[in-house]
Length: 177
Image (cartoon, rainbow, N blue to C red; front, side, top):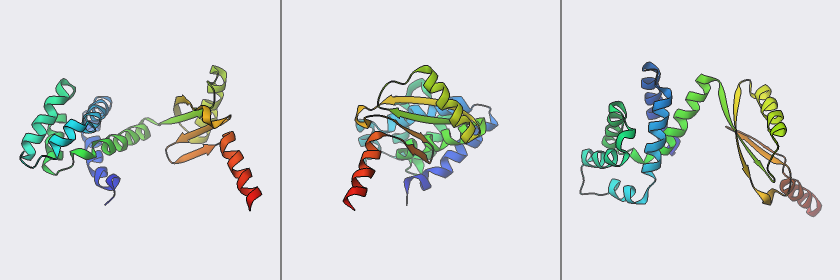
């Protein structure tokens, strides 16, 4: 079974609790921290230890998370541990953040460019993506010099690849056909 499929019910449950308590941001923060902890190699070994009970695994995990978890967050970790699902935290956090973004009518848009973009270029891209997606966008930019030129834009399932590298690869493929 795909990890996302397993993670979805937990993310939706966390989202429902967070919405009810008007605590979407704090839950997002707790899930992000927990996801990072779950990806640590030492913690992964603890989580897979056959000598620990699910309660002991959860206690160890919660101890590492420290004060970043409130009581609801701790209870969520206990539930995940009981169902052997703590390793799904990265997927749960991703799904939760998508649900949160939908509710807030915001979209995270990743812009990968060959060079650092100027503020006016970013403003123009943000405006165009806002019009296309119909909601407020939050841009996250990175530079990848291997693109040669152009940009790659990612927003959820949508990818717009306007990089020179991709255009050259398509041209080479067309010439070899």
